[in-house]
Amino acid sequence: MEGLKVDGRMKVKTLKENFKKTFGYTLRVYNTQNHFVDEELLLSGVRQDDSVKTGEFSIDPDWTIDEFEKKFMETFAIKVQVATQDDSALAENSLKVVSGKSLKVDGRMKVKTLREAFKETYGFCLRVYNTQNHFVDDELLLANVRQDADAAKSGETAIDPEWTIDEFEKNFMANYGIKVQVYTPDDSKLADNDIKLFWGNE
Image (cartoon, rainbow, N blue to C red; front, top):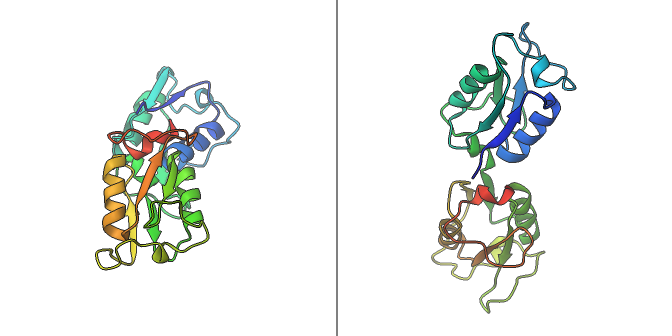
C-alpha cells in the first residue's frame, strides 16, 4: 500500500479529510499558538519554522502514531496530533496509523449493515453466504446466518485492517460460523487473498 501523499500546496481541510478517509482517525492541526488552524489555509502557510522546506510527504500506514506526528513536524514544521475517530480523545501513540480502520462487528448486526460498513471502511465489497452457498438476505442478523452454531463464538469482534483477505475470511468463519468472500471494489471478481484489507481504499 502506498502511503497517503501530502504536499505544501494542500489545504488543511483536504489533508484532514484524506487522513480520515484513509486511516479512520481524526487529524488535529495546530498553529504556533497551539490553536487549531484555519482549515482553508495551505499547509505551506501554517509552517512554524520558515527554514523547513515543503516538499512531498508520504504517510506510511505502518508508522506508529508517534512516528507519524514526529515525521510530520520534521517535514513540514507543523504540529499535528491524531485523535480518535469521533475526535473525543487523542489516540494511543503506540498504535499504527492504519489501526483506525478497525471495524467492530457483532451478531446483532444486520448483513446489510456489515456489508455497507465493510465497503465504507475498506473499499472492498463483501459477499455473505448461507449453508446452500447462496447470498443471504441482507435484512437477516448475523446471528441468524451462522452455518456452524456450535463452533461459532458469540459477542463482538474487531476486524484488523492489517489482516490479509484470507486471514479475515478464516477469522470470520471461526468467530461467526459464516462464510464470507471479499470482492474487488467494483464487485467484479474475488480480491487477491494475500493483500491486506486496508488496500481496498487505494
